[in-house]
Length: 362
Ligand SMILES: Cc1ncc(COP(=O)(O)O)c(C=O)c1O
Image (cartoon, rainbow, N blue to C red; front, top):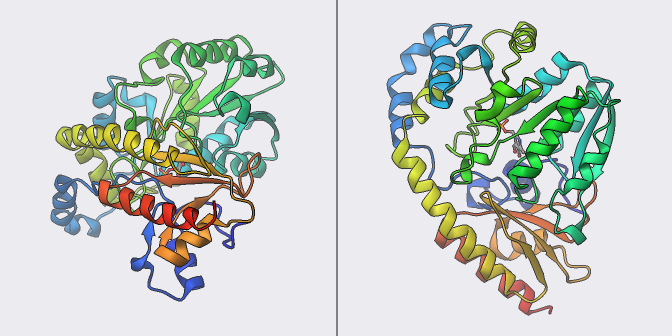
């Protein structure tokens, strides 16, 4: 079991306090943030916009919604931005008021928390290691009319795997036939080149909601920004009506518009992610005692088969590296870990540290 209480990666404060070190000395592989850092253009816009903090943001965030709508070629009333995607997960559950929901496990913990707060009965579709942790068409049999909503994460967190589009389409159609809201979390889809996900088909699928995060791809988790999309404009209007006003700060809203123009940064990110995913996957796969699954987004999921080894702790103690233990994911145990794919130098250091820990034991 992990020694730390946090449900998420990225909790450097807790770990640093436990170790008695400055949190800036930790090399954090536990949060999946683009290592290119915040785009320069965003940094500049933010610096120039500090005076705007003396006014309230536009409560409707019209300019941000119009920019997102133009970027995705959808009408602005299909979009609602939020203070990080997480806020919208909770807002959406409050809006849809599901009584019965299906989640896929192992998966992101916040769907369960939002559903539990709404007193919704939660059913689980378990991914299997024997199927390579990949979603398969077995899930279709679980999409029965008693359900009110289904959460899917594409690519899934923590496994990093993206189901094939034909399967996703079949799932969506079965949800439509059974009057089930399909909520697709595409928080990491931007990292997968040439994968548009569900946004282009939303017009034909008003029962589908897409949730997107800007915090990972554009490296602004501290600013907080995400958005929801649906062509079901009546439900979107009721989501909007339930939200607290001004929950997105002025700087986040400005950054949201700016990032959409950062096409060179997007290209550079795709080049990095293609190169480093493959490199880290192949390198980790060669370490005796490690079984890795080929990542599609910017993080890699693996199992460590050394009995009694707490690899998270070993890497922290020996190298000041923080990786995500997946022991607290239902369906997984203390053998499973997730690491962010970072710069080549950082990935190389992770590999070196891991080889050192493992060579002493295997
Ligand atoms: C799958 C998934 N969805 C959504 C989020 C939340 O993203 P945001 O920072 O936009 O709230 C996370 C954060 O880790 C995540 O892993």
